[in-house]
View 1 (cartoon, helix red, strand yellow):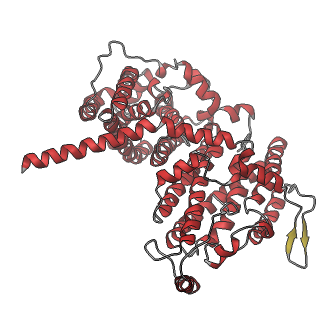
View 2: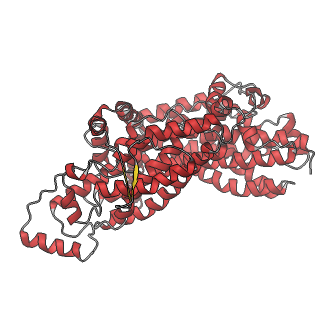
View 3: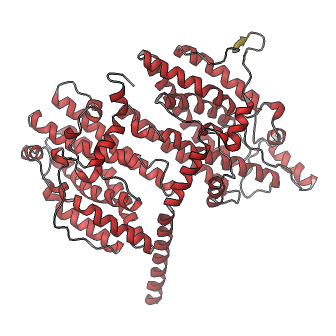
Length: 331
Length: 253
């Protein structure tokens, strides 16, 4: 689960005009760009950054939901949640592989995540204190991710677009699962209803922030649109999300925590209140409630696992050496 | 077909093994040493939780008192859980987790194969046929890792050896038949675990040989889980597992 709004890659590029024009013509013909095709350096750089951030988001995103696997309220929920979080890990794996086709290694990308240099979706820097958060994440966070990822299935870079097709199928399953958790709560006891409303109150605004800064403040968007890495602007996607989600909240009998939210008959869209961009900037720059915990947990898993990875390499080397010796003895 | 008083406790022993080990594996989620292992550990955890769910549902039906799979999984007291001690042992490092998995899978794969072929209970035969395939994967996967770590670096070899010393003493309980189990064996519901010992010994010896690990001499095997005498970690595991059901009694989730 991931949404745009962080990328911020430097898309400047130094190729000749003729090279760029030929490349653009391929993009305009909706041809897919494949890993070994000639491509502008800025295009490669933007994609490495975006796919890397997307992969990191899947991996860090396992933590807030993983927080509830051991406490899930029923066997069915426990199994569904573990399977869901496993899917996120799988998405991370495809995405790292897609990024590797552009000449960057998984180890390099991992190092950048662990050092805090690479970004991941800020939504995962919010905590999950109650079970309803698992419902709200599925419904809202995966819902927002889908809005962003459906157009990515048509992204000009082939491996990314293809990875997104499977990812989107799984995400829409997760989204329905999340909504179903919310529905169960909304139809439950007074305490369960309150738990659901509280989760919506905490996740609504951060979910809207997942689409990134408003179009007037978004850098590098134009070039990404021209290269068809991105198909819709941040505000367009945010608006689509709100339009789809508000009726779902109404159906649950929950209140969207935005007193300025109003249907606009003219635009056929919802007008919404001002997003707290200061909070967004604070969380993106490392000052959210969970930023330090997330990176610490990732580092701990990586450091604790170092000896396992070394053992696997040492064992593989021993096997290769033994085969070599056996071959020589046979000759 | 045996009487419910006989079958239900015997089925619950196995269901509890699956639930508790599945829960332990799920604790790794987000903290595994390699991304591929995140997926593999979750996979094995899901298999075991799925087996637990099917077994609890079946036990509930046989019992006929309207208890659901969640009643069994979440709403019993600590002493009523009858899992063996091996599966409740804490995860420790990756060496401990993989060795625990090897010991368990090396028993359960032939166990389910035998249930699928010989049990007098048709539903159990069905559960077993699926579970056997799953446990064959657990056995292969954990065996490969035990070999990699046992015959890997100096550090990994030392950690594997520690895990063997720590966990081997819990394997004896796999082959013991509680009174409930003995009755189920007599009724043809489940195989006698002692008849599976030779195959388990051979599997473990083969893996240890490739892993350059030595089988320890354990004079006293630990037991108690089948009588509900669990270690101190069990209560903490249950406190987490049961949290929602205990905090919000009677709710639907």
